[in-house]
Image 1 (cartoon, rainbow, N blue to C red):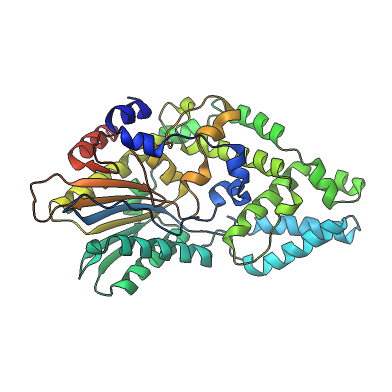
Image 2 (cartoon, rainbow, N blue to C red):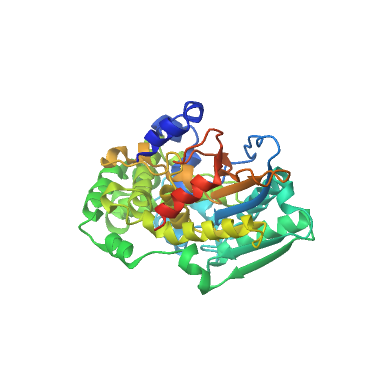
Length: 424
């Protein structure tokens, strides 16, 4: 059944309260950092929590978090731009703005050198902050010598994100027993991609030609290139305008994740940034989201993760599990997870590439350190009462397609039944 139809039937007041709103160009450009897409630095500083029904206390948390802010994926993402600018400088082919940009890139390289793909100090602070708010919002979960498990993919920035998160919890309560693991044995649910979904992504007939045309029409580099390079002959011989614009876009987008107080947004117009972000967002929608052309094949990658979530929750409810299950991975796992689970506005479908961003916005779902949390509540004095579950995306309470009369709290029996069906 359609998500909005279910919410209309089952949630009622919650639907009216939370509402449905598509992303607008004005919303994106109100904070240029949003044009960085999944490079958007985690924006949350305060967790939003509705008081639980009378008598209910939190007792278990199930979590999946993306790694925190990182540098661009490769050192070369910075260096080839720097090398080209220096080549232009040596040839006397840079404008005054070009010289200024070259010096800014040089300053940036002091921080980024040999750190391609690494977690930044901001990424550490993000996960410590999320852990701190989780602990203080649900202190009952972390009392005494509770057992917690933390699992990470094999990528170092994910491992260090896990470590930062767990370190903060241990600072708040040294008695906690947290088992941390980064192992191939967990990759089957932390970072699963089926052969079928990989084949669909690789098939050039599915979307790649359409995307190529979209990127070509939304990348207009001449104004930017002419503002940086003063010699048309140098540009003709040495500069690929399309690649240079994208190279500067990646650097500009990633600045928010670094410790260097520099910006490159001034070399772009807002429209240019919005167009480039649409291309970036397009790739994530078709590659990780509920793009209709994939017929659900991509978001089905999250089924093993949903099954793991259900198993961990049931163990905790039965009294044989841990107090919290913490998982750390990537945007390419978080996006299909919340789409498959039907989090509000995370599973929308759109056929028109020009409107993709209205139905799917990567920065809203998977910013750096983006996370999904399920908080479980019970009434200790009345164990016969229904277990309740609350769903959060980036620490904001979200509706899911399960009936409830007490949003944002959902009856576990109905939640379990629904997600067992979804994850088959």
